[in-house]
Image 1 (cartoon, one colour):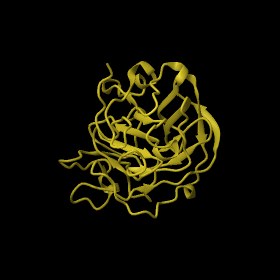
Image 2 (tube, rainbow, N blue to C red):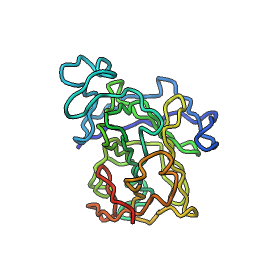
Image 3 (spheres, rainbow, N blue to C red):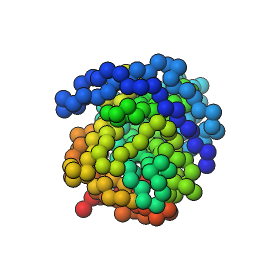
Image 4 (cartoon, rainbow, N blue to C red):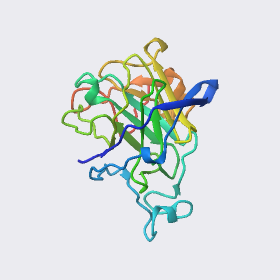
Length: 247
């Protein structure tokens, strides 16, 4: 299945306050830095690209008011807590890290969100943005968006990736995943470390307990566990599917 390929953006600039008094790198992202993909736009059924409700002329016309039976009303701009990092694979074993890393974002609300314009970054300068040329990237209520560095299930460990990216690497032992707006508003953050009791088992994704899907609970490594759900390539994870409870 063809996948949107995301473009790495510009370097990080100044910092701004983040949750808990930490410091989050603020991107310098001129509009021209978001380059629409030239790849065919085809995603898994859980993601709708620019899909307005029936009878709407455009996503803009539908942003605040319209509703459809499948997806519910649309919220145009995600707020802190609306999007939660719910799973990530930082150290695949069946394939190399450069082929099999991925991140799952979950819409926590009972209505759909437009993810376009969000930025994923870390503290070291890795950075990419979610762009579909202004057409929208709409995620249904409680649904997920799986971002990965390789869109081909034949070579990425059997993972169905919704959007592929470049310019971002998940370190095996210690790293950060920041989800924020282009203006630097932090929506969610995970700062993991092998020394901090995070479940970083090679070949297993780190999976958030489904009862902890909020931006405070997912800061606690005790609410994460190594996934045991089998992937076709031999590793374990549940990208795009409900997480199993952590025991």
